[in-house]
Length: 620
Image 1: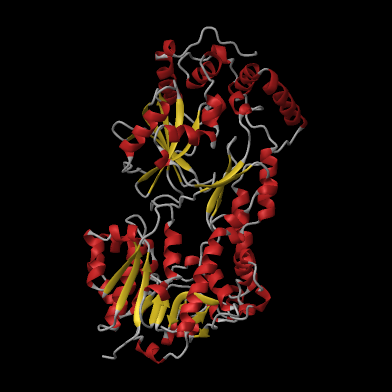
Image 2: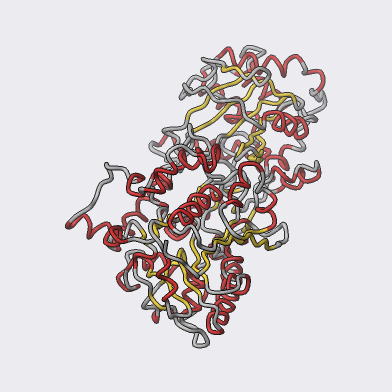
């Protein structure tokens, strides 16, 4: 068996909810399989190390050494990973070959012992920068670092890197770490832009190019598959070209660890991890897929998807225009009168003649007869965060990155690659950004300029929104974490003084066309079939693992309120807050059955003596 003197080093930043440990385990096992006597290190942060127990401690039996780095609790998982990676030359003694966790070693790497370079890596995309189909994308990522981008000829992938224990390598890594700190300050959390900037620094040794077989990036590296040493199976855009990169398989690894069925077979024959049915482009198709036109088409696809899911009201006839003017005037001076008009136009009946236990009628009575003084603050998606914090529920808040009063102040450079944009004063303004660098930022600014200039709630007779000072804000993106939904699941609790017997579960909400929902009795978690009139889901939604935590949150937030719909997310077994709504459907709900409307309305009717203010008067 060929000996390898160069250390193999991984960086791991993970917890029980992600799949990074599972990827790392596969890669470490593959390295050990092909080089039984190699020296393998894992460098991890203190929080990750604390989770390496139970099944996760299996990785200790494969590696030779684990080095633990301490961080402040406020440092994100992504930052911890890159901060360790850019300091590896300081942390690890001796020559090393760094491997990303999303790799698979498919033959001996002992040949690296003969490498003479101080720093060596494989070209990103296996081509010169000027030919790279993602060149424009990378230039956007690098823009915040303000170096001479026109001098980039080679853009290196950081997934596999060789570093000699030399003075030149130490200097390079020190500069790379410094540039990464600058990168983070600009909202760029990946490490390759800082790597590229360091490679052009006159004080640093230049990165020397390794043959593409050392880091075979599947989309661009088909030519290197036959002789590949390291397969980068998640590659750019996380293209799932191997079973080992599929979420379902990684979840199996989470459950079984080193005893995962078929894993030992895959380590012996990596080709068996590749599906036979993958489509291979040839001729013009291959040229397109590896061209800049593909990236432009991809960008257009992303932005078209964003725009088609946004709601843009259109005035199609004179009658629509007249109603808009009427609603705008009445909404300012007589919102209750407008509410009555809108109700009769929608349902053909005067709201005063509606069934006394109808939920829509009871919402109207809440608006006109109860204390609504807190509604404005609680409906404000920014102001409500302070209210939640005062209740010691800060742990349910998504991380807020920034907020802006004007669109000219929006600074995309300070934001991570994925985030969510929304306004604090309305609904229908949420944009999920999964790839910042492909975003049509001018469209985004035009869209939010219109939203900020629109006083929400006036034309719909929801006067409590009038007092909200509008802004745009960016917050943490919660990716889909359930196999049965294309979006994160939203749980909408109908809470009466903090008690919620019913919850509307919304899934596949990436698009209004695909969105489905179903009502559940929260006491026994039983589906209430027929309670939804439109787009009722057919799935049986499992009991949320955090249901009791959700019920506690709903009680704390709503215990002083006669009614409030409290929307929560469950993401990786943790509860997150979405919003509080007082007039669902603006008090004119058409998507619920009469039976369900009567059940909800009956609850408010039963407790009306506790919320009616006899002295309350609203402009009619």
